[in-house]
Amino acid sequence: YNRPILGFAATTGYRDGIPIGNETGYDRFFVVPDGMEKVIDFVHRRYPNTTIYVTENGYNPKGISLLLDPDRIEYYKAYLAALSKAMRKGAQVKGYFAWSFMDNFEWLQGYDGAYG
Image 1 (cartoon, rainbow, N blue to C red):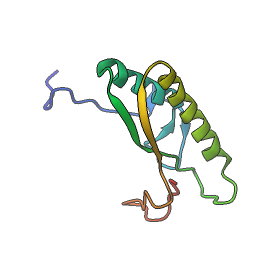
Image 2: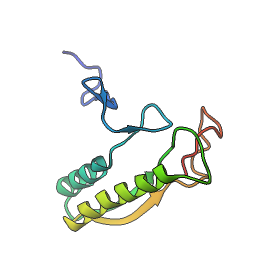
Image 3: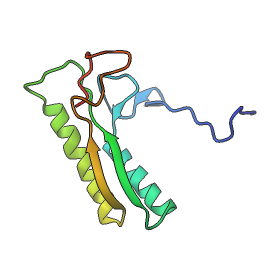
Image 4: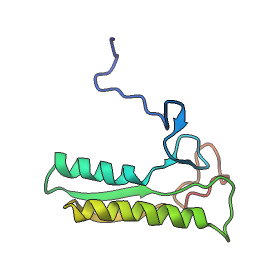
């Protein structure tokens, strides 16, 4: 198989036609908290003693409710717990920045998405 770019990977949110996590309001993003732990662990093992900053993380629900938002609360609980597990294993995470209501005036969806 000849690839035009060495190391190119096509990503998908499905495995064997099944979503890898709960769906969000954006069809390419799924809720997969274990992925946070795995990627931080990978960076920690690959680049030991490196300071890590998570510069973007957040949730865009299906349907917007600014008053009741239990899915977003559960999202952050799960992702921060996964990040904490990676830190207990030695990852030197010094910063975590959650999406805010100002972060993602979405390029194609305008104010239809509520990422923060």
